[in-house]
Image 1: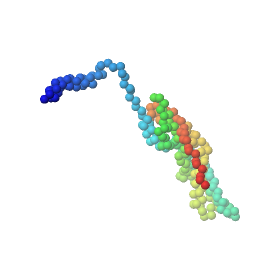
Image 2: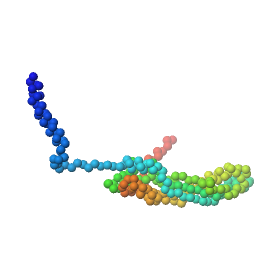
Image 3: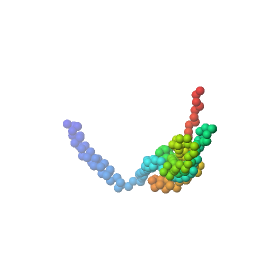
Image 4: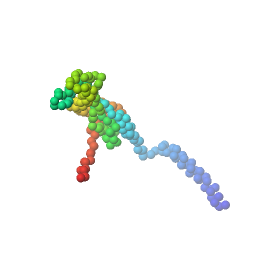
Length: 210
């Protein structure tokens, strides 16, 4: 058969070509070439974002307060006001919420710098330490002692919040973020970290339909 004879004649050439391709692929690095391969680039961006988010709300400063709170409540214009005096111990904590960091808040500048936009500092919590607080005196409670004491402590707790904000706890939280977070984030990223405030563009509120 003519076709079979042709294939038999071509078989040695097919084997030679196949062996030649195999040898060239195996030893091509030894035959000089001027082309340089593009170096591999690895970016640990996702690792940074994950590590930062896992920090959650990080407490950066705690303010402790001790105060005397006088709570008065008008009962009637015909009888004296009720009055409770407390000796109050309380605390307030400033923090940064890392769960608010988004992908666009982390920007790489070259190979050695990463810029991270931090959320605004916030008052994580404020509370009265009841174990260190006590009722100093009660006057004209008119058999409403428990109710008046509860109201007094709620007033004292709000007073702790006001005192913390007036004392600059948010400003101190921002300063501590630079002192405490920057070295820690540089350890996580392996780069020099620049902290900047996070800015969000808020859509204007539409007027209500009448």
